[in-house]
Length: 357
Image (tube, rainbow, N blue to C red):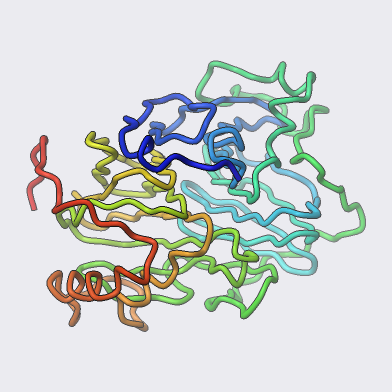
């Protein structure tokens, strides 16, 4: 992991629509990043080890119906796939599910996984920790030639080309069978490191003001490398400006509109957009549209207690006007700030753009 100068990071403006090549805050609009067309799919790399201090790498996979990957495993990496648009079928040994928007699958080290895209133009987020799985795109001479400027895969392209893309260090598994999909889902998170499927807005859920937080993965599921939270929220203003000393936050807009304040600048996230905020980045966010879904991927798992001390467990799957008001949320946050990886630097920012709430 690369050491970060927190003071310098406090002052670093976000890079827009480019990968920095070093740990720094940056924003990528949907479709931006380094793009490669392989196996009839467009892989858009949005985070590399150089950009994240080795913490993780990530890419969006965009493809036509029928494209996919055979059974393969990785010996040392934790992986999570989220469907952002369309649908895809995933396989684990002896199990299969069809995933739609917001659904996810977690794949621990050594566990074989395969997938097939079911709807034309479907988009899947690939997230792997630590970084290195996607270095095959950056270093392999044959695959490097697959880099493209286009933002869409080729119409009528070959979804089963000889240029097979598997992450670096992947082992192919030829003895696994492609079992039919069933509808008996894992609606709770396991107690340890094991593979599982999860429907959107299930898992362990917490009530926030006009928001529900659903854990997709916790540190106990990823060996402490990361955890993820899918938030569904109503419009709400910025909260306090803050930064973290020991963990990195990544914001993905799955639906709706989200303003993110990053070291004095504001960026608007719409579906598919992404903001990377390393430790030391002064940030906060505001929700602009009803029904917004925000996916947070946080490395490592050190910040999990923040959600538990500020929220209340709930059995609901949608946000409601519950007992936690914004005032109660702020009181809990202030009371527990000393025990969290959170440094408050000031009140909510003054908006430079209109936000009707």
